[in-house]
Length: 284
Image 1 (tube, one colour):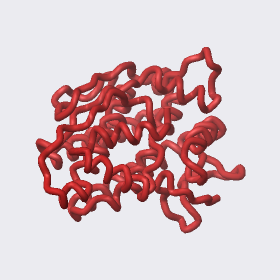
Image 2 (cartoon, helix red, strand yellow; image 1 turned 180 degrees about the horizontal axis):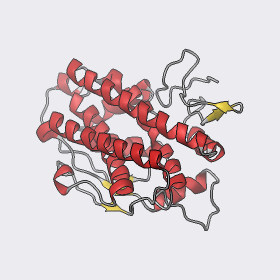
Image 3 (cartoon, helix red, strand yellow; image 1 turned 90 degrees about the horizontal axis):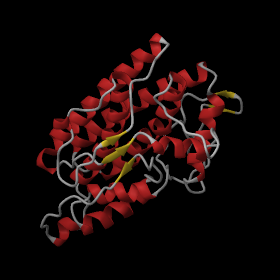
Image 4 (cartoon, helix red, strand yellow; image 1 turned 90 degrees about the vertical axis):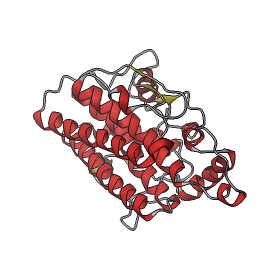
């Protein structure tokens, strides 16, 4: 569910050619993209290759980085749209190059707490706007939505974290507690992935936009972490964090909602900086 195979698939889909793909893989490793959520997205072939000079092929394109981000935003936008509204993005928001995928699973969450419903609605709006913005910025270079699995993949993640037994199932849409745990599965991933991708962007306008999205994703992650802590779900969230961290190399750059029994709403390294996933640091 949260393995490095996902990064390779995402890069395959985002890269414009084989040289771009190799450069992206090397740069992603150096930047610390490392582990991001896997299993929710599947069947992601490479985007159509374009003719480029040798010099151009040696430099990763900004469009490849933005398409990497767009694939993450498709996932988040669909998750929150189904949770809040009971349906996904309009078809016009999911077209582009590459094989188009549908969405499996998902339905409206029966929220019981007004504040959680309201911030879920706000996040759904933000994620919709992220998809729209990135698609506009990419223009004809945008990739289509890959296949998104909102059903069995969460079960696999919950089993890996030890939240359920091997014959049990888990849906983040059944109640607001499970919704929060489902959101936690990839909210931190979005923050750390944007942090890792930022150094790969050469266009300052795009870099500024990516920084803006990173800030919003960090707000989202903070909201989810706060709600989990207040609802007494820190132990379950920490189990998810440990499962992710076990796949993320030797460093401990995935932190739970509590550390040493105290609230940990803002996961950060020893310098108070957000992690870039796979960085290999051992902080806290």
